[in-house]
Length: 430
Image (cartoon, rainbow, N blue to C red; front, side):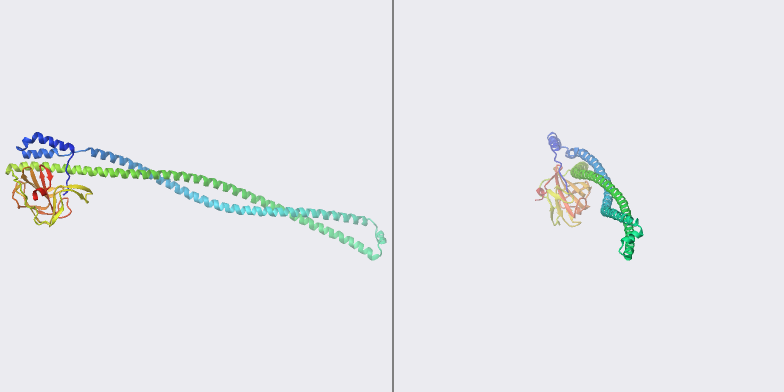
């Protein structure tokens, strides 16, 4: 059984003052004194800790709202970033494709430019050769024309013989025909070069326009990439800011929760002390009622009868101890004697039963007033064998061992209280 003493300075001072003022009256009205004392020990119904706890809980609620808002903003920024990352990825792919096309187009323009340069040079050579051939042709035509102005007789007379005359006439005709054919071929070659040069210029113009369009597309894509990258960087900064805020809010929430848990534990302890004080007040009232029908016991001193003869050992002594199931250190107000279920619990000395019922922490509990302001208590009983107002003798069965109430196994919690305050049972058992 776990109980803590209410030892606040103001309560101790109040009890001391009451003891000094009412010392003479206590001997005449002891049961009434017990009731007054128990009520005096009651802690306030609402402590400052409760107000502090409420303030912390309100602060935690506001912090939770801020945390939720930051998380929603982070989620929204993440969605925007995902979309922009997707668009940026598409732009980078398109940029790579356009750059590949631009590179190909640039190579084609370079090739066409080279072809045009070759055609320009070829056309220049063809025009020059045509002009040279045309000049020579004209010169030969002019020479032959002068010869042709002579009469055939003059040409015959100038010839050595008839064969020479015939050869001269035939040679003149062959030269004239060959020159005409050469001129025709040169003119056709020049015209062909001119046509090819024009086609090449058209192609070069078309490819240059495509290259210019690709350059514009690449520039637009690069501007889009730069814009998207800037927006992604901005979103990254916003997300980092929200993440830092979330981490800060989470840390603050953890710290607040630790404070809330500590205050809640303190409030639980105050409530336990309040209920303990109420039980003491109830005990005093029952003792007063029982005293009306039974003689007030008188404790004469001496060692008690051992309250649980079949016990197997002491599992928890009087004083501070660790309580794992409660998660705290507690002050144990009695002796815990391990025993089997339904082992006998005996009256340690004679007295009057002032309580025989259920308690929140003690489970089935029996309280016996043995006189002189001393009370003995048996907790965690499986069943109770006495009733309120009943007088018991040393060694008489008052109940049977169990594990009711706040208990982890079958045992008897035996406690001695002097003027409502637990004292070490070994002072009476040895």
